[in-house]
Image (cartoon, rainbow, N blue to C red; front, side):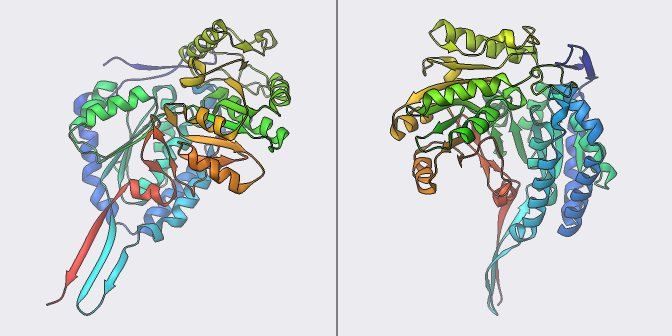
Amino acid sequence: MKPIQLISPVDGSVYAERTPLTLEAAVAAAARAKAAQKTWAARPLAERIALVKAAVTKLNEMTPQVVEEIAWQMGRPTRYGGEFGGVNARTDYMSQIAAETLAPLMIEDSDKFRRYLAREALGVVFIIAPWNYPYLTTINTLVPALIAGNTVVLKHASQTMLVGERLAEAFHAAGIPADVFQNIVLDHATTEHLIASRAFNFVNFTGSVGGGQAIERAAAGTFTPLGLELGGKDPGYVRADANLDAAVDTLMDGAMFNAGQCCCGIERIYVHESLYDAFVEKAVAWVKTLKLGNPFDPETTMGPMANKRFAAVVRGQIAEAVAAGAIPLIDPALFPADDGGAYLAPQILVNVDHSMRVMMEESFGPVVGIMKVSSDAEAVALMNDSPYGLTASIWTQDYETAQEIGLQIETGTVFMNRADYLDPALCWTGCKDTGRGGSLSYLGFHSVTRPKSYHLKKV
């Protein structure tokens, strides 16, 4: 089979190359996962939790290697370290709530009846992980799936294929059996065949809308449950009573961190007319402090995008918007590392509207459009005028106001005075083209288990 190449955005070189499994080998891998599942699920919950936590400890020990590999694979500057702060927090929280969440719910326990609801592992969980936060996004499903008694097959993005190998290395070193957690390399056709043939009992995918549609087509008629997080066009709304400096700092970081390659990154901002000019001025000053360059340079705050084709999409959106009347406020000459390829200068656009792709389609890059609004109602209408619904960030001084606005927004998470953050105690979910299902929180365990009812009668 044709090898899959990982082209590093740092210098355009082939950083890694792997040959995908043949269909026969892939079917065999899924069968091994199925065969190993009952034995794994039969282990005490406390033992599964201990093994998963030990595996994450092993992963932490790889930090220096992982940080370097992430930079080579998808371009994130090494100054930001790995992703293990979030990995540890999510693992700890899901481990902490596992016993209570997975415990049977007793309805009646008398001399006549024992009635209760239990939760049972689904079986084999298939994770198709993305490259932008390659460890965090995998952990979101991997940890609860294993703790709940499922076996897991991981197919990582080709852009970060080494991440799957490191995860397998750490989890196997901690004592999790090889067939309980497998990392495999697959092409699209084999992936779709496995899903269509009911090789898995749950499929979790994070990626593009087109990718999600392909998975739904492959799963059609199989009744395999799917968890799909398909991106977003997340808005920020700065009300007249907002803390201006805090709003600028958080929203611009949310727009530009990781070269804008965040599922819940801020891609459009609506500012009350009383603060608009000051917000824009401060936002421009904020962006001008960024340094685009080689991710191994300790001074670099923005590395290349993960692939030059991703950068080309953003460049196209910017060019179209400018041609339609948008005004770019950042001179690309301030960022000489912009090479027309993967290295892309950040940009702020004003005089934008929703007729422009840059305000409606996911950019997934370092560009943000800013619009002036005169009321909450106008802001809500604009925030909802999107095919996506992952998160929304509201800037105000008042809980009740944020809640009232949040009730009106079609989104998965409502933030007040923060953005681009994932709380493991809250469900990570979305609506509309962002997809369906949810991870983390107690609902994350519900997604990788099924309810099973027991009605026991004495006669």
